Amino acid sequence: MRVTIALAQLKVTSFNKQLNLNRALATIQACKEKQVDYVLFPELFLSGYFIQQNIRELAEPADGESIKKLQAKAKETGVGVIIGFPERDRESMYNSAAFIDQDGTLQGVYRKVHLFDKEKSYFTAGEHCPLFSLPGGKMGMMMTYDVEFPEMARLYAVNGASLLFVLNAHHVPYEQHQEMYLRARGLENQLFIAAANTVGLQEMTLFFGESGVISPDGDYVARGSNNEELIVVPIDLGDVERSRAERPMKYLTDRKQKVYRAHGLLAE
Image (cartoon, rainbow, N blue to C red; front, side, top):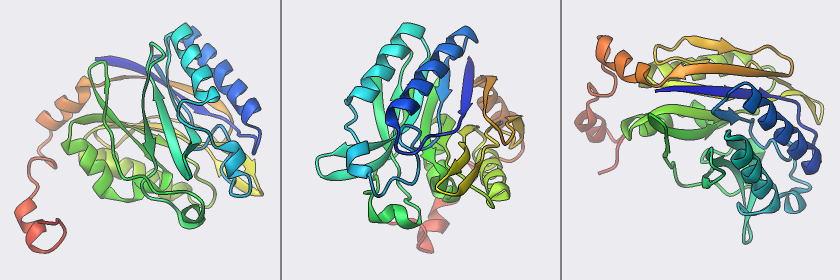
């Protein structure tokens, strides 16, 4: 099944949710004209990354006004949306990603599991790795630091994912880290990875972009620059099963869970 993905490698204006929302809506419209099926935005796109001082005024529930406007735009254009935002659920704040399907339905929210550094002081960690259905396959979501834990991508793979959407907020000097982790997770799980990173300065921190799509063989299908751009990439989710069938490396079926469990890696 062929799916056309767009990676929205854009600058974010810190604390200006309305401006970022307007840019997202305009990008979704542009995706319609390019016959895109799903557009992926970076981590915390609606708010900016460094929001600890203003998190309570920027965060909103998953059924808040910003997400509703994105749902309406998705329904109007037929473009599915994956976008990062600060979520408020009662007194807890989450670093979240909404998945809005092509018909405008909010299929669900992923809450970042592996919080990085100071994120732990103002976000609550998520505890679930939900899978969602796409035409021709299943997908999961991850964010920046999540990718550095191979267990999480493997969990998605063994549960049937053929595509992982990664919402990034990666800044210099971690360009090589981003490439290594993305390619490794794609290769060792033999699935597609689509990653959208932001660009430009936020609070004197430079985000470097280099968004990309990784094939089930661990190679870049497409790779962005260090500037703003909309990267449109058609992929065939059927390549996942072909790669797993044709390659001699059977990473998923050759696992030795009994051994891992005996040595304490897996709980009883």
